[in-house]
Amino acid sequence: MQDYKAILGDIHRDLSSKTNKGQVATYIPELAHIDKNKFGIHLKTIDGFEFGIGDCYTSFSIQSISKVLALSKAIALIGETVWQRVGVEPSGHPFNQLALLEVEKGIPRNPFINSGAIVIADILLSYLKNPKDDFLRYIRDLANDDSIGFNEDVALSEKITGFKNYAAANLLKSFNNLENAVEDVLDFYFYQCSIEMTCSQLNHTFFFLANKGNCLLNKSRLTKTQAKRINALMLSCGFYDEAGEFAFEVGLPGKSGVGGGIVALLPNHFVITTWAPGLNPKGNSLLGMQSLEQFTTKTKLSIF
Ligand code: GLU
Image (tube, rainbow, N blue to C red; front, side, top):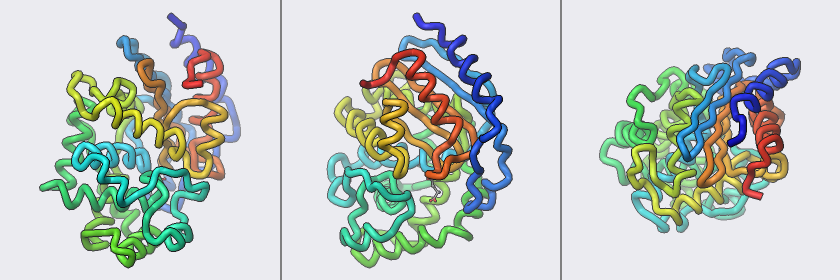
């Protein structure tokens, strides 16, 4: 077995000393005051080895990473029907870009850009009895951890400033691709994005996608094929308009969020999570991406 502790220790030490730590997201005011020196990494392998380093037990806002969990719940509820309302192609544009949505008549390119995630939120709103509670229950069950929760201040902060998301939702509504009221869909979406987790909790939550759709307690959450589809989407669309760069540098399916978190996984092998709040110009965690590049290079473990 590889000496993961030594490898992660070296990566953490090396990157902690870097002076350029990127810029914390400021467009959601509640995220603007997060300390950009925070830096955690957590690894869990399929055969049960688990190791975390740095700030891996401090909670952060998972933001767009929640889009993967929302999609997996939507697929569990309505299966392939999801793809009638959202595409599966990378957008090559920033996560909140609107022009494509207008050109492509209200069918978002993929479920991980904001407009696509808003359509998925609409599906969950239509099919869940108590949408916020049921979605949180789903995530707590995946992680086997009832301490995971929403951060209402972050949700509210985004509600007050989320003009582009309101624009996207209104466009979707104008193309008949939202069933519920714009306000209700966005309320759910902002709460979904405000979920907080530590690197360790995030790792446990995503374990099912490395484990053929089966979560920690080995309960089946998705079929093997559904897990494959979600992993494929993370590879092609998980890093805004830097998905190609992430595949090139790291070579793993994954998803980032503007809170500075990244989750990446090698199916049947491991899940690795990082949190470093400073972002690069494309909105991905600067040290997170560098950590994962070093990890797959040093261990020679990637999908390629
Ligand atoms: N809640 C954020 C938004 O809608 C998510 C962005 C992200 O993490 O990429 O802008």
